[in-house]
Amino acid sequence: MDTRNSAVLRWVTLLTVLANIAFNYFYVKLTGNDTMGEVSARYPSLFTPAGYAFSIWGLIYVSFIIYCIAQLQKTALDKKIYNQLSLSLLFANVLASVWIWCFTSERLLISIIVMFLILALSLEMFIISCKAAKQRKHSWWIQFPFSLLCGWLSVAFLANLSVVIASQQGKENIPLTFTFLAIAALTAIYVGFRTSNPVYPSVTAWASLAIWVARKDTNPVIGNAAVAVAIIAGLVVLTAIVRLSAKRKLS
View 1 (spheres, rainbow, N blue to C red):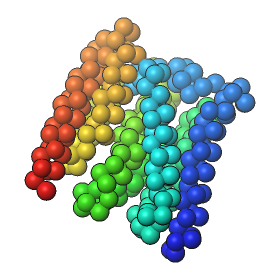
View 2: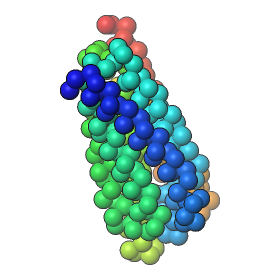
View 3: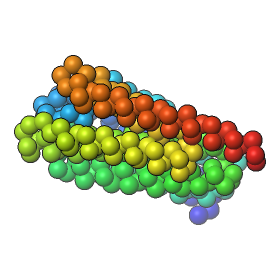
């Protein structure tokens, strides 16, 4: 892809990110539909975190905008990795808007399929950016927005799936919630130790603490389990930071 086409792709990606942010902000206000939190509250899902947890999207969107501006700099236009990441980021943002429509209109089965596709795209971007950072071809920070996104969507997919299952069963499912918490913990451990990336497990810790806040009074057993996951994820974060610092000193 020549420089001109690269610039066009990256501008389109930036505009798509901005359009998704605008859609996310205005959709419920303009349509009068229930918010994502209000829809989730209608179903007895124990894995749904407290509402404040979703504020992480603000950080994710800011990191996207900074990334999109960085990839438009003249010195970056000839670097192929930005084209690889931009295409996936573009589709992920389009699908994110589709997901909002599906979930708030309670098309829950379709929403989980869309969420899975977004998760797959985020995983692809995470892997590509981590490899680039590891090989020192690009700054370590290139992986930051995709680590945030992949970390959050890993938990959000489980939360979305939990809501779908709760909508079918019509009751709380404690064993399933324990299973999902275990998956979140194991994933944070695997990613943290495999990549020495502290961002991904820090998102797991954030989400787990929000689950504790949501469940500490109504279901303390689940709340305590969520705290345990948050502590484990926090230890993984510290370990990843130490390992990352050691690698930088050796190089």
